[in-house]
Amino acid sequence: MKRFAIIVGLVAAALVSTAQAAERFALPQFKTSYVRPLTEVPPARPGVYEFVDIGALLVALAAASYLAIKMRSRRGLWWLALGSLLYFGFWRGGCVCSIGAIQNVALAVADSTYVVPLAVLAFFILPLVFTLFFGRTFCAAVCPLGAIQDLVIARPVKVPAYLEHALGLLGYVYLGAAVLFAATGSAFIICEYDPFVSFFRLVPFQRPGDTMQAINGSTNMLLVGAGFLAAGLFIARPYCRWLCPLGAVLRLLGLASKWRVTITPDECVQCRLCEDSCPFGAIRRPTRDEPHAPRLLDRRRLATLIVVVPIVLAGSGVLGGWLGPTMARMHYTVRVADRVRMEETGRVAGTDDMSEAFYATKQPRETLYADARDVEHTFVIGGWLLGAWVGLVIALKLIQLSVRRTRNDWEPDRGTCVSCGRCFEFCPVERDRLKKKPLSGKAPA
Image (spheres, rainbow, N blue to C red):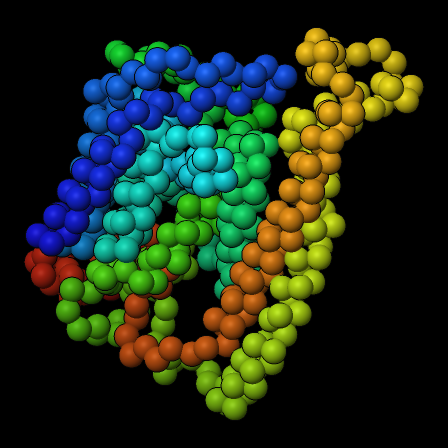
């Protein structure tokens, strides 16, 4: 723990030293031909509240890791999740968001002129660092999107394993698409289609020192968020499990975490009471309780998958490249070029706001069309990469399902476990440690 505190301190110091001149918030992406003028003076230093947000995140992550791994307190995690929801969700309006920060980092990598704001950089890096050390404790009680879903779980049902594996791939697809659209300057789709930020901004808080008013969410996204929460009564955390792009990243990092949540503080007594306590299907049974297929069959399947991986990558890459020009319509320049071309050829009558803004620039149409072709070419390349990424994810999932890992006890899955601590109170060894009365029968769903 002491070594980890030193590492966290070094990370925080690096964030401060490398981003002192960053903007408080990401600059708006205007959907017009407006060109933002260059600043002639250095930007203002980050406000004190930016450091308050970073400090709150650091404290919440440390508290979640301590409560989940050292204290093993489900009640403590519940209260921390409520506090995170109130602060990072309703008080901060869902911004800065660790999930949306993926897009800022992708844009900064692709565009050297874009500087990631300090708070965004911290909100992106710190959950990754903590996950590498302590597993997905960020998901347990710090992420407001996870917290709002966790607090509405009422009567969760079990999702079949095959469906869980299939739906779990959607987060990686969403991650790839979000990176592509952000890197090309087209859209921040994670923020535009966040299902819960509309709830967070229903009450327009404005904290002292803020210069950005809270914006109410759209009616459509309110309905989508309500749908997720309604489904969350019976399907635990559907957005976190199957769509969250950051969850997809943390799932991979969780596999390599140094410390992680365990069901029992001591030796497993094989009572199976933990099996039904997890609403996320993240507890894995001992391999001796599973029907064993012949080892030769697994090896043959694995060898076949390894051979077909290049074919899958090539095929999905071709499909992604073919979809590139269609995805390019998300970019403003391409949409303007399409509109101007239709007006020029008489396919539409009159002008709209986009074309009028273009005509006001006095720019030749040929220049606009050339810029649009460049964007489409970029999307063809990006589509190839996105398609190859999706193919790689599918291939690795099939390979993972063909590889057996020996387990002697009931264990949380290192990647899918969100460290919520629900299984603690059903473990007889844990209850004995806490001097609680043993449970009988199966744990309630």
